[in-house]
Amino acid sequence: MTKFETYIASGTVILDGGMGSELEKRHIDVNNIWWSASALIQSPDDIRDIHKNYFNSGAALAITDTYQAHVKSFTDQGLSETKAYELIDSAVALAKSGLEKSHRNNGLIAGSVGPYGAYLANGAEYTGRYHLTEQAYQNFHRPRIARLIADGVDILALETMPNFEETKAIGHLLQQEFPTVEAYLSFATEDGDHLWDGTPLAGAVAYFETVVQIKAIGVNCTSPQNILPALEKIAPNTSKKIVVYPNAGDEYDPKTKRWVSQHGPINWAELVPLWQAAGASLIGGCCRTSPDDIQEIAQAVIATEK
Image (cartoon, rainbow, N blue to C red; front, side, top):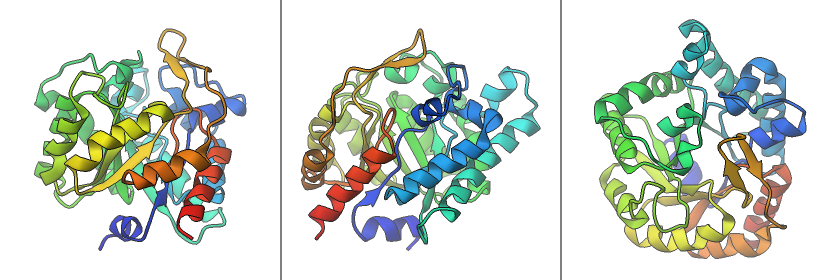
């Protein structure tokens, strides 16, 4: 078995939490077209430290700060292609270094592959309202995927995917050009019932059942209250491991590029066992969650596995 398969076969895997909000706590301005990836230039040491904190809080998997770090994102703003690739390299190296400096003996590094909507930097990952040809989607995603693989990530994290046609194009790309590479696929959903583009979640999950390179499938960056409804659509339609990592329940304002805080305390001790019972086996947090949240998730998992 691969390293990722070994982890997911051994019990519940704890993922990390939000990166952008942790950078904001350190007074790093991420309100720009590159979002948290801008810290790869501004303050890489903080990225490393945040990864370390998540590992020390109980996470077994770090997601690289490459969600919005696409080659075209950087070159559009005047950076050279060489520099763009170096920043992707740096993101992977910082995640690995965070693991090395943590208290963990081992862990996983997932290479974040955000959707085309993230590149648009207008909140389109929360609408799915964009349309490219399959070849155009593949041409967009190929450079970052190839570089993350070359940098030695353990798994690709195809995350916050709101557009079904885009995910099919990426799946075909992996099958055709990267046949030995493993990934997990996490859809973006408004309500736990449909992808943001309107595709029924159950059907989207079922489509990837025969794509063997997708080792886990699920949802992320939706409110915690949507996770259980989503699991009810996911579990009957897949034999794969199921991944869920909600945001903190806030809403994103694409005009200000900021999250609007509307949530109260999240009772992870109550929610996590319900998600496990419904089929989830990779659990973490997304935007606005913190190392404290991941620690509570880890403690809830430990309590259920005693």
